[in-house]
Image (cartoon, rainbow, N blue to C red; front, side, top):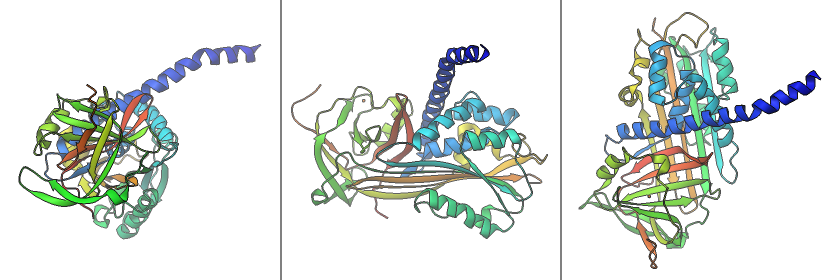
Length: 403
């Protein structure tokens, strides 16, 4: 009889468990959306191309959040836009499981914690890192800086199919380094309908009203989700991959020199709802091929975003991370990101590392629409999860170069 009671109890509470899990997943997706917008606004203050993986940075910071206390914990709560470390952990458990099981495209997210030889993690932090963030934990002798950097970089290269190399430099490490937290994300997907290579032509791409460069412009006509957004003064196009849940959103300002105005308007826009109210007409698409790689030191951007405390030796509180009493602070948050867009599809990768030291250290016409991306535009590479949009990569393509 006790077994029957247990089963009935389980069946009664199961919907509540599932509802809770969904709530935490939605919280993480929404939090990542807010974080994406905030971080993009900061990074876009610099001229030129901008490309990064908001989810890679958000995920590794969410893992560090698990070991934070006091005002440091509060700063993570506000900046990551997640209510608690537990909510972040439960939500990311679902996010990572989903991303690593998407069909018809290659998509992988992985986490790793490197800890100094002779040190241990607190049981609670280690458990959540391994079980929720699916993170491996490995001991490293950071004093041997070249060997330690090589070990970390080889792991990153493997997880990103050799697209991200030399994430960590030896001089970022020292005998005072206690932990390095790393997140890697890799995506490769073919378009649902590929561009015909024979239709790719050399055409002008206008950097502004006067200056232009020659680019390899891909050409295709097909039915795509599209809208002309009056509020943004821009056109929005969704290019699906072989898995229709994954797509590249291209936001093209109507004016050649309208990228700054567009970015200012996007700062007040919910990016997860950018594809609402779209319809599917025939569209003549012109999109340049490009390959971009970026390296971003995220220390100052994260300070501006509200995480300055994590970099302060005497104020940072990561007391729930190590099982020793040493006080930790973050010395560096670095991200390298890569994207290639061509006739076949898109390949993108990113890796983000946190190095921690001890402080003893949106009218249907009959004619086809024209979407000619011959001037700077915004891209969002997104995936649908639980009827919400998760931002994997984001960027401003100011100069679509090929490396």
